Image (tube, rainbow, N blue to C red; front, top):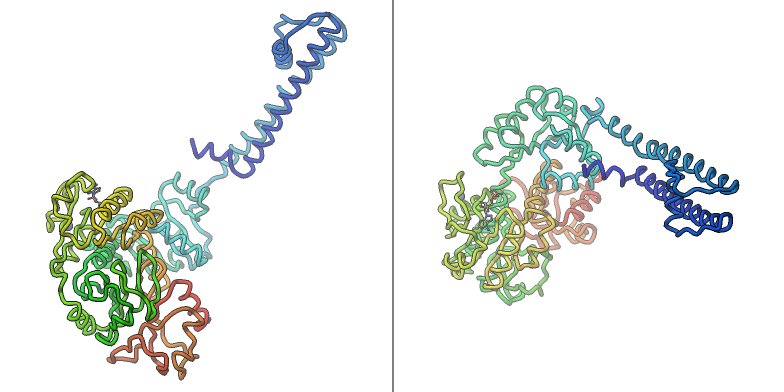
Length: 561
Ligand code: ADP
Ligand code: ZN
């Protein structure tokens, strides 16, 4: 019903509503004028006095041709006046008004209802589009990214109502039909699509992949719920299987522990490792980067610093605050050197995980392998997990976390499925422990800022991590996603730059991207954060860090064709 009502407040209908209101005002004015005239004539022709209300009452009964006859004129001018009122009532009230209502509202509305046919297939020549099966916050965020990149997409849904709403209200291109029906799949031209995104349940995804593979080879990226199903989905024909919950769990876990450097590796390019290491618990707290001399002592480069969700490219004067997180690039040996330097003084590391859903469970498994001790809290048992034993209880309940020993915790992962709960838990934990590392999960993009405001050191948004992974796959980019806004990515050396030094290449001033490492070739150690006078040679690979804008600028500047 709300959707139907909404129809009247949009576009042409809205315009017509204005016309109707104007017409009603005109009718009301007419009634008031007749009522005044009525009183004037009655008094002057017949010497009778009526109230204004009686005048309005008389006009309405006459105009609607109801004519009770309880108040009547008894003179010719009076009869003429009454006749005029009756005729104008018939014309303006009984003919024009209903006619207007029908032609302005009813007819267009019926036409609109009859005209809406859900799209059942796309034009035959459609190609290069992304087909999305299963709409949720992740694929919605992906759609926003596709829109800004002008990549055409289509959403396939089996529900007529959803199709109508998405097309009408959000302007998405939608095809209505069962995603596993071969006819529907051919109708959305999967054969000529750029990529297919399977984001349904695991069994539905498997069915979908098998159906698609029976007639075409278009690449499929598949979001898998249970990491154990990944192999099955690959067998069904998915090219990329994304265990999103596992990835999110890992993202949360690496950022929550204060333990040795190797626990913090978030990704790697060959032998180059990218790690995020909290300043708190290291001997560098309160020093500038120059004083900390991490490069000289370990060979590692600090390529970025996170503080409360803001990423900066550091300079020598950058101060290492206890709440900050250093993004480092280097080899495994260099990370080991850092571990030796910082010592395992956080051996008594302890991480609390609030929420033992799929993501919490993945975070726990990750910490288990490091191993970092952890305590899980959930209000109910997780039927899919036989591995972990959580403390059962409502984490927001009074005293529960205290009883479980939260004062001893160095890190906290807040990962319930409810953002208000996450915000509340973050706020409460920050209040009682200013030094605890809080890593929180945002189920909805809108809550990222609130979680930072509540005191989280790091927020991971399901939707943006998922959408970033999917976009990277679509654009077949080799890149590591640090968070919304910062990527580490690999590119071959642009031919135009061969033979120049790094400072001559003007990559940084021209694009804003920085070179994290130079790959020299097969079997050779990459050169990490090479100095500006390094000569760039043909065949080298660049590993760069930058925002998506800066990355686009880089492509624009060096790979225009
Ligand atoms: P996901 O699988 O995406 O991690 P789930 O909905 O499966 O998401 O997991 C969220 C978990 O958080 C559930 O197991 C739920 O019981 C738990 N949870 C939600 N609110 C609270 C709370 N106030 N205290 C403890 N656990 C909670
Ligand atoms: Zn578990």
